[in-house]
Amino acid sequence: MNTDRALLVDLYELTMAAAYFEHGIDCRATFELFVRHLPPQRSYLVAAGLDSALTYLENLHFTDDDIRFLRQQPAFQTVSPEFFDYLREFRFHGDMSAVEEGTLVFAEEPLLQLTAPVLEAQIAETYLLSVMHYETLVASKAARVVRAAGGRKVLEFGTRRAHGPEAGVRAARAACVGGCVATSNVLAGALYDLPLAGTAAHSWTQVFPSERRSFEALLETFPDTAILLVDTYDPLVGAEIAATLGTSVPGVRLDSGDLLEKSRHVRDILDRHGLRDSLIVASGDLNEYKIEELVAHGAPIDSFGVGTDLVTSRDVPALSVVYKLVETETNGVVEPKTKFSEEKVYWPGRKQVFRFFDRGQYHHDLLARAQEDYPQATPLLAPVMRAGRRLAPAPPVKKIRERTLANLSCLPKASKALRGAPIYPVEKSAELERLLEDIRVQHFGAVESSNQEGGL
Image (cartoon, rainbow, N blue to C red):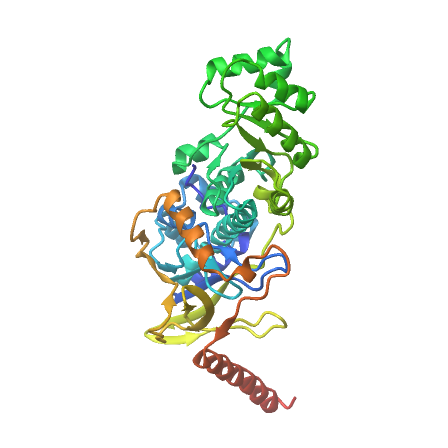
């Protein structure tokens, strides 16, 4: 995929960068990326997007064309030529800690923590938010769908309904991180070594003079893998034709209507003709709620192809993801940062997330200051980038998928419910609470003192 992303940024990131440069602001800044709160339909999130974030930072640079374009913009007409010289040599030199992809995270817990010269950290904001948000959103949706399938395979079929071709590629990877076993997106398969899955469209059947001949042709070409789409016209007739071809049939697909009743009838037809090993794949506007109902009623479906609802996360299309300055360091002096605007207060300072277990199950998390230590808990944030270079190659998506499933197995059963799941406990350490209160007192004390001096 194209790694030239320097202009994929909100304008104000670059105008702030220019102003930092012009005023000689060169402090090191630490930003943390987290979700403020989980929507009612989500009891957990699956962290994803880290590989995309690291790839972006490693390749971040401005081309001559980028700089020429910026110099033409009205916002930069008063900026010195030296700033554009700086951009010409720009590279990211910062550090990052993050939770592993496939880790379950909850509200206010940092997915990543980035420390860099403030100008560099500011420029990275928009892209990091976008990529971490979208891939986490899709991976979290996929985990719910996979959970609902109860051990039956889930295939990602959503590229044609994704919000753009590149989103389809990222969604395919994120869906497999979340637990899907394969994707229909061939480019994603090539880029990320993902298993591919697909059948044939209704148009295949329609092109042939008869449904029987379309099935025969597909099986002649792909005898070991062909999945016959049997509901172009009448699913029961289509299944009967597939079952009487006189050859083995790897599987059939149902794409519409009452999937519970149709799958039962189709299974009976296949079994009656000795095709007990033929699989039934179901697709057609599926989501975790529909799949949960099908499984609960014993639908004889072997795998589910899920598209639109998965890649758009249709019930929760956005999360309250933010990227906030939590600390600056100037000449060795560290200053924790937060803000106090209504409903947007956040925890200051570098932090660590500690996960506590009880008999192999998650018990609670503790959001604490980075320097705190809780030997009985597992810290989730670990270094992944130093001086602009990743510390280890990206693990295969297959391994990340296994991590996701292992983490889900540790989540209490009640927290995995699709509806009405309890809020998982995320506590705050006494040191962190004290730091927030100290900053509050310092800020409002200073404001009150200033008002008194001004006679207000």
